[in-house]
Length: 268
Image (tube, helix red, strand yellow):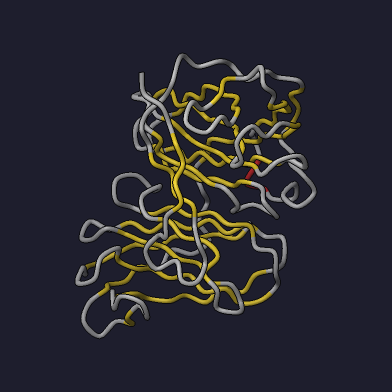
């Protein structure tokens, strides 16, 4: 029987911020349906409710408790819900709680964790986006970052296709900007945003392993993604708490990689 654990890691080019990575060692026992206390039209907390990303979605209210399934590695409790997707859909999910540090995981039909998030939402809430190249049944897990945390939460999710507002394309090669930490090629795109908006961005390439970074108006890295766009493509979502100009980096994962790419992004 396989299980899951979390570990601290310093992701490549995270800058001065320590990020959290998940070591996927599998899945324990069979899936339990989410203990559903309430279902209503898709709204989340006041920080996220205004975004049109949630149109057609669902919101579930539940509670983490010692009676739930638990992670054998760290003792955190979780609820799970089964989601059936069509090929190419994007799953967007938000987990909000006033009682614990929210953490989301997405597991495929083989028990592999293919997406996770800790703090991309407001405060310490989770906000996740994963492209699902293959149709089928996936498991969305609502859990906590800290072991044995309990309390109430709201889980909102939607399966959708994104109406991209911007779709620039480019080529990373000798002469492009170089990342200040490892010298990998990158392009930078300034994005003017209002406090409370959500940015979702996709970077695809047939030539290199795509990597996305988002810098806030002060130049700090606040979000990143490598492979949640499917294969080696990147898909990133982030809640923007400040008004100002953010910087979206279209980057290669490894130094020396180069080639053509397509960047898509939208603010909602």
